[in-house]
Structures are given as C-alpha cells and as structure tokens.
Image (cartoon, rainbow over the protein chains, first blue to last red):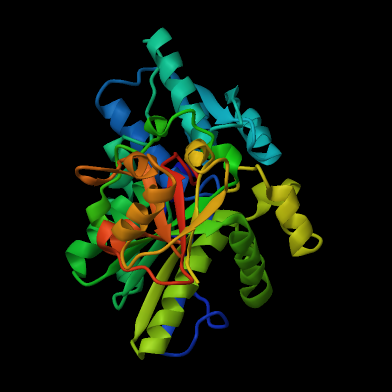
Length: 315
Length: 92
C-alpha cells in the first residue's frame, strides 16, 4: 500500500485471528495490531488528531511549544509529529517508565521533565498542570480531556473494526486516557447496539496509588461510564503471563498492556463458551514488546520477571 | 468463610494498618456496613449520599462493581473485594 508520507499511513491496521487462544470455532478472539502505526502504537491516532485539531483551531502556530503529560506512547507519537511540523515538545513523564521510551523521545528531539514515581501518571498530570499555569504560551493538548483523542477512534478505529469484523460482539481495550474505549465504543454501540465494550485496567503496586488523600484521585475528563459495559482490573503478574502466552501460542510479540487486554478477553471468551453463546471478541494490541525489553518482561522465569516489574508503570 | 476486602494504603488508618480485612453480607452495601461496625469511619470514606465516591473504585473478583449493580452488587463467601483510589492508570 502506498502513502504520500509516513504520517499519512496512520491506521488501517490488520485484524488477525488468534486461533490457538480462541476456545472454539464459535468463540473467537481477534487482535487489532496497533503497533503497525507510524511510531508503533495506537497513540498515533490520538496524537495526530489532537495536533490537527489544535492547528485548525489556531492554538498551534509555527514554532510553538507543546507540553504534555504522558507515560510514553503519546509522547513518542507527538514527538514524531512535532519534529516534522516544526514544534518543540516537552513531555512530563513519571520516572518509573521504561528506558526505551526515554531513548525514543530523545531520538525524536523531545525534552523530558520527570515526575515522581510515587503517584504514577497522576503526578505527571499534576506537574504538567502546574507548568501550564506558569507557561501560558505552551500548548498542552491534554490527552485525558481532549475530545480529538476519542474522535480519532470514533472516525478510524471503530469503522475499521466494523468493516473487518461485522459480526463483532465484544471490544476490549486498555483503559488509560479512555480515548480508545470512548471513541471506538460509541461508534460500535451506534452500529451494533448489543455490542459489549470492555475495559482492561492495569493494577499497579501500592506506590502508584500512594495518594495523600482519596480526594486527590483522578478520573479522565473523557471518561463516560455509560459507554462501557464492563471494566476489569488486571494485575501485573496476570498481564505478564498473558503477554508471554501471546508470544508462545500465537507468535505475537506485544507490549505488556496487551497481556492485560488478553486476560480480560479470555475471561469473556470462557464465559461465552460456557454459556454456549457465539462471540467474536476484538482486542486492541496497543504496541509491540520492543519498548519493554529492558524491563526483563520476556526473559527468565515468570517469577523473576514479575519481581523486576514491581513498581514500574508497565501499561 | 467470609469475604476478603483489600484496603489501599491511604485507608489503612481505619484498619489498624491491615492490608486486608474480612466481612460478611449479601450485598456490597451490607458488607460495607458490616466492616464499619469494626472499622468505624471506613464506610464514610467509600460511600456518600449518591453511592460510591467518585474517586473510589471497588472491584469484585477483579470486576468493577459499578458494572455489577454498584452497592447492590451481590457478594458471596469466598469473594475478594479490592478497594483502590481512582488514578490515571494505563498507557497514556
């Protein structure tokens, strides 16, 4: 397939069957390979749409500085687009994220401001808001509340899935900014009223939940509970085990958040199988495993890998 | 048997530092009332007039109870309930 530029090749990702992980011919799992996007993750969709929207609204002008809280993938997508379009990018990123994410951001010319590991992405959001208040000329696209994030999935991910899998019964994706689930979920529910929209949410170690007060909690502004039909919390060990299973059984080298998505998807598949119901379950593979090699997730015993992952933001 | 309830760090002041406590009840609401009898004040940190507090997430065997009937969600002996503050998680 031919495109005018790398950015133009956004989306149109393959949907592949997972025949060895599917419980049977009536209950099938499908993986949408979002690592086949320009910078290797699903976040290209949100990032390119947010930049296009900000340009259209006149928020971004030549030479502007973009500043964004990110645990990595959105930052990498923005860094690539910023380089090509002549913007400066500053990423506010928790210090407990993988080395590869930092290296990629630096390769694309982005600056990184580290936020404390304790508190995880909550702290990155807080630090970014403080910076935005002190630097009114910087443009914070703010992926957690930017409608263009969900709109990207409403206009691209949703229609692509429906075209490739008209018989879709379930859609499962990771829950972060909630943009993928909100946009794709809204589109699919309009087109297939009975479809189930399921979130797989990473459950981290205690460090990440170390708020001083429960009222400091955070729910992304994009989140609308009514779009979802279910939400599962997936532990690091379960996500890691499933990430390895994707590679072992299907040959699919995915990032760790995709293991969490598979864990939720397999739970749904087993329920459908037990109930004798047909199911076609689409899973979002948000990225490949390359950026997580340094975490040790893929080598040694599962126990060793789990110990190394403790305290890391793996999704 | 009873229902195991896992308590996040910031709420362990109500459980004498215990990471998990046990309780009984037929619904989540009854379970929280039972817990509050031994860990006074805990329920008020989880629930307000409208139901579960905005920044509190409760999972029944790893599934968010907001999709299982909220405070009315049925619970059974042997279940595990996990309470967590809502944070910005996930890949972003």
